[in-house]
Image (cartoon, rainbow, N blue to C red; front, side, top):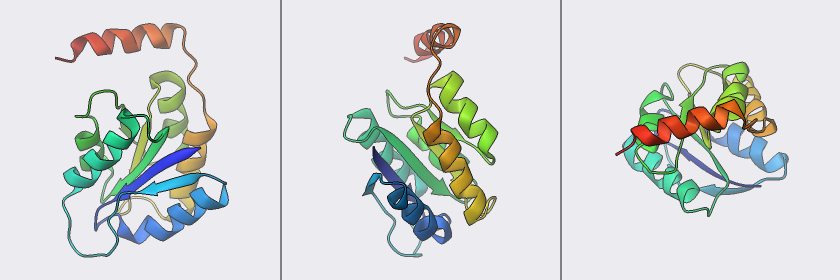
Length: 145
C-alpha cells in the first residue's frame, strides 16, 4: 500500500520508528517531511499529507505532531480527507471501521514508539464496514460547505 507520512518538529522524535515500521510492513512510503528537528508549521505538513491522500496518489496517511490534534485539524480542511487523532489502537481501528478515516494522527508528546506502531497497525489492518456507517458519513458530507 502507498502511504503518506508527515510530521512537524514536535513529531520528529517518532519519525524514524514509524517510517521503519511502515517500510518493514512492506508499504511504499511518500515522506512529506519534516526532515530535521528544526521548527516547522504543522498546518503545512498536514495539508501536504492530506493532498496526497485526497488526490489518490496515496491510499492512506500517517501524520504526527506534538498531540496529533493540530495536524489532524489541518488535514481535515482538505476535501476528501477524514483524519482522526488517536492515542491508542482501539480508537484507530474504530476510526477506520466506522468513520472510514483515511489519515491517522497521533502525538509524539503523548505516545511512545511502541504505542505509535500499535496505533498504525490497528489503523492499517482495519477495513471500513460500510452499511449504517456509510449512511452516517453521507450525513457528515452534507455538513461540509
